[in-house]
Each structure stands twice: as structure tokens, then as C-alpha cells.
Length: 427
Picture (cartoon, rainbow, N blue to C red):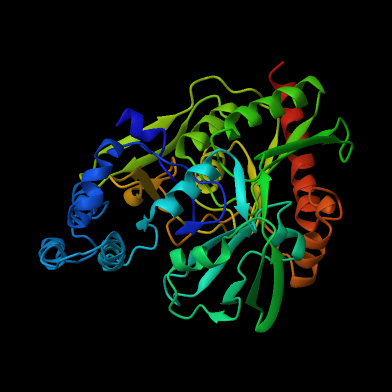
């Protein structure tokens, strides 16, 4: 369990076109030949993993034993037949986050985990109610972001093919492709259709960028965290330490459009901001709770404001929820995505992979934010024109031309004044 925890996935997406995390990528690879010749065994392996680990002991009111009898009662003449059966089997759980990846998809996930993106740079999710394909967020600097694709855009067509009823994995397969080739996405935004012709690319992704500005007296340290990948904590530590040396008066941490990632990246980063207090608790189907706390190793106690929006999901919600519950930061922006579930991702015998929802998580105060999201302390919406302007001019993000950042500066100045009064009172 200790090994597995390091790879727990908290991305908001049922399938992603960017960095996610993998646990046990090499598990059972020694049995590859066996599973190649026995596709039924692969079906049973997937069933067994779900049976042992799925977060809901009722399997979302599905007779899971009956499902096993149904799918193991079939004859499979190829891996492709087994893959199709596995996806059908998992779909019965009605859980977009529990999903099967064929070897190519799983390999792509492993490549993405290294911080290298192949594709157009968007994260996709299937809306649980409408079943439509929704953009969680475009990744900065990628073809999708440069073209103006926005969070909450609904993908209607991929290269002219309707996505109605399309599985997220199928959509990923259509959107991915060789670097330099093009894919056309037709999206719906505010009841208007938009068409984006995107050229696929390979991009090295750094999850953290930071800067110091004189937007407030004494200087503000601005840190933008795009995703909780394997190198996120290290880059966050570097950013905070550098800004501390520059003597900033306070910080704005930007988690907008951050879809999540590794559980332990969010915990490690929370400990950089918190001296003490709870961070998150995860509860599996046996009711076993694993509580993570701060460990007296914070890097700074200076005032902090966190920017969030509807694209801030999962690991972003763990971090922002912990900072809010411990009254360590003021949250500014709009309500977050609302994903309170944890997935474990592991390799299967033939090189394919499986993501399984294994636990729920709760903020330190016990909030279950699944579907509900986290409501910021200060709410400020961006209209479509403002969002498109920031999408076209990415350099304006985190500047006074960014309305949400400007509001964050107001909140930060108030916190700095309050912090100064508190420090004077204790002398």
C-alpha cells in the first residue's frame, strides 16, 4: 500500500491528453506471453482488481459476480475482443474514472507522466449526466490553448465525426496522432458552435512557473501550478524558496484550470504552506481512513491567496480545501470542479492498463466535495469575452489585466495588513 499510495491519481478526467500518474506500470509484465494467448484471463484479471479494490462495495448497485459470470462465459478469439468486453464490463459501473487503457493508450499515459505531452493539450471528461465530452482545461502553451479552446467547451465533433455517445477513450484515440498532423474539433460554447483546426505537437511541460512583481508594496510572488505531476512538488519548492529570497510580502497561488494529478504531490505541496493541521483524509470501501497532516516544514508563513475556477479539480481541490479549512489562504475565483475520488492506475499482463476508483477523499473539516466543489471565499466570474481575451493573450494571465488576479491582489493586500497588525500585537 505504501508503494501504491505514491501513484494515486486524482486527475479530474476520465481520460486525459496530458500528464497523469501511473502506479505499478510494470506489474505482471513477466506474464505478457501468457495473457497474449489467453485474452479471457485478462478479462478476469480486470474483474478481480475491481472486485478487490473498487470504492463502493455494492459496485454502484451492480451485481458484480453476475457480471463476471457473463463475461467469463464468453469465448474470446483475440485481445481486441477482450478489450471491447472489458470496456463494456467497466461501463456497467457508471463511473467515468474507472477505465481500461489498451497498450498504446497506457504507453501514452506513461510517456505523459514524464512531463512530455503528445497531442493538442486538452484534458477531457465525460459529463456524468449529459454524457457529453467536456474540456476540463487546455494546457498552457499547447496548440489547444493557443487556438482558444476553453474549459467547459463541449466537443461535438472530431474531424467531422460526431461524439454523440462516444467513449472518452475513443475520443482520445481520434484526437491523438503523429506530431505535425492536424485534427479539427467542433465545440459548443454558450450555445454557439466553434471550429478549431489544431496541429498536434510534443511539448515538454513544466508544471510550475513563477515571478515577482511590484503589484503591491513589498512585492508579490505569483506562482502558477498547471498540474500535480511527479515534478510539481520539486518545482514548487524551488519557486517558494526563490521568492522568499527576493523578500516578497505575500503570494498568489494560481490553480485555475489545474485538473489534478498525483495525490502525494498535493500533500507535499500543502506541507510547504502549512505548519500544522490536517490536509486530507481518504476513505476506502472498508471505511479505513488515511489522514495526512502538515509536518512543521512550511517554507513560508506569509499571506497567501489561491485562485481557483471550474477547471480546478481533484488534487487542486485537496490543496485549496486544506488551505481554506486551515484558514491559511483566501480562495478567489469561482467554484471548483467537484471531484472527490481517488484512482489507482496499474499495468496489466499484456501491457494494457487499468484505472480504478479506490477511495473518496475529504477536506480537513470533513467536507465531501464530490460534485459539490469548493466555493471560494471571494467569488468573481469571468465573462466569455474576458476568458477569450486571456486565452488569446496568455501573458496577461497573472497580471492586473486578469480580473481574477486583480481581485486576488485586493484580498492579498487585506491579508498583508491583517498579518502586519497581528505581528505587531505579538511583539
